[in-house]
Length: 77
Image (cartoon, rainbow, N blue to C red):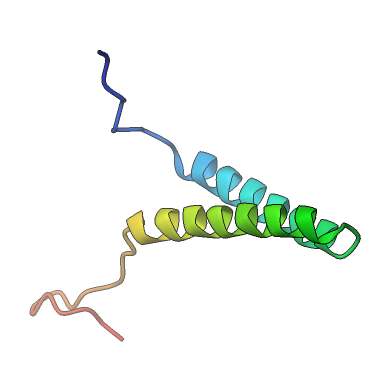
């Protein structure tokens, strides 16, 4: 049985594009909730939750850099 590729190489622009697309889909689903019956609303709510979890996963994997003091190596600010 084959294994999944767990290492992806995406540029910052590609990750940004993914985040924008996911946010746009969340906006679309939340607007759709207002005009559809309860069964569709629950389905789209579950999709929104999954997409929000995806955004959280992307955010948690980012490494943020800040300036450090040249002598002590401690972050500034």
